Image (cartoon, rainbow, N blue to C red; front, side, top):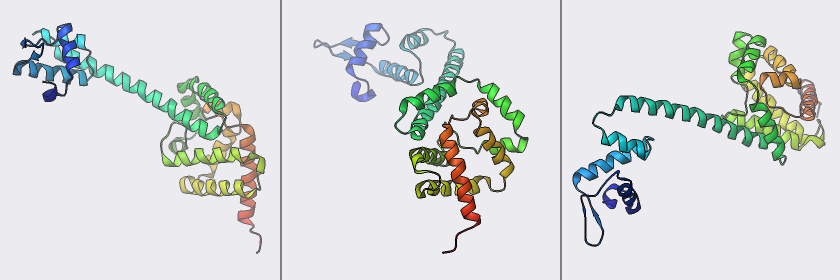
Length: 246
């Protein structure tokens, strides 16, 4: 029976004990014997378990000839959808924490504290604020802005670059390591937002304000990291537009 259905003897014993699936008979040695009917019933039990029903629910479903299958299945579907929504929220929180730790480096608790602060904010208020400051076409651009819940490779690289920038903060804005990071950031800016300077200027102004960033739902990057980024970018653009002769 177990080899045929993939069910363990222990499971069959439990089903027998709770009255869910009784064997047709037992041998003198205590082995349970099942007919084709019991095997079919066991397959039904295993299928219903697979789609999320509990054993007590399955017992009632199989015992009653008047069971409302349509209602039960619709209720189960509704439950599964809600569970998916909850799991999606957990997935996003886990991504935020992983990415937050990537930004903060060894300061794990700082990342956790920031993500807790971020998750406590009202998402609807943030959405309304976003709609009030961005034009309709800019809302589409907003969707391309890297965020801490994304698993897109583009967002992951931005997160890694910010994390690197924080680690090299003591090197100063003109250091080679910092300038290499800024160079890659500028390449990514051109890849995603070339010609969208008005949008980027607006976004940067918000990012530099802790209060506005919070209202927009942006991850709270330390002010000294933002200032380093700003100074390093100004230096980078000056060098880019006026290269020194070799």
